[in-house]
Image (cartoon, rainbow, N blue to C red):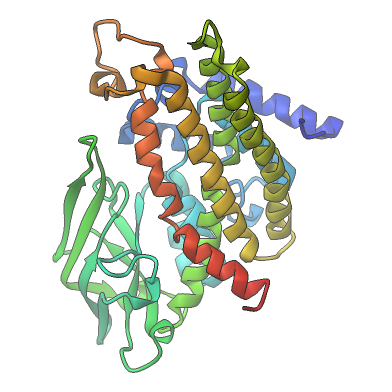
Length: 398
């Protein structure tokens, strides 16, 4: 089943496809589609291309640099980008901090930080999780004590994605220990070049440096870097997370992965026939494709609600749960379709440095690495178990 678009929406889709054909280099698209590791230059380059066209912050209001798109245009753009092999945007500045500043920041903060997000002057990372404060985010222990015109920050954040590239970090910090946990948190913007900030790499099992620990030791942060009101940060944090969870659904990326799965299953033989013809495998493929089609519609409804002035609530939790389950199932099926070819981890292939032909189909290069890496989808952004609690509370009143 395919969504039906109006003639105007079809014209926009053709415009996006023409833009991608002109601006997305075949080399970069191949790196994305083959599961190779993208460097900062790759990510920043695509950021700059979109910003030049005015299509970077596609969910921001037009007055702040957004393109003024509706829900369908946003859906079409993100889907076509994923299908073409465009890199996924680093979300922390554009998709997370930007909406928070637009809704809760003062005019000085909007005027200063928003243009810097767009032009790439600042690379942001997220300072939420701590050792012992992951799913229970309200238990954060990093403190910020007011001292005149500054806060003095001490503590630790962990799993800071791409923090090694960042010059700025937005943090949840505890500014009051005498009240209920959620009532004593503030939202602070911290320059990572400030004395006392230390970034330590966390090397994952595949040998990659994607995440980090960040330590704060007597870090001085100007009071004007406080977003909104002191001790009201939990409200802003929840607002940010609804955007993160909606984006984690990754409809376009699931669609692209589904096409890759179908191709892999049609090329792989099982009992003398293409795997895609095997009844058991075909049934799992059909189920995940049906689930994805249903999620497309739900995703459009949530985006439309936000565009109309609403805030995604329990719906974003639904998208997060279902979206991550669908992406994980597709990656699991790709790995199964590759059979023994998915066993080795091809580090050279992941970095695009292999000079000798690799045994097995190209789809096998990243099959195992992608499968294991994206087990994290059901954990970050608030674990799926926590999302089920949110749904039961907000919708069922339990």
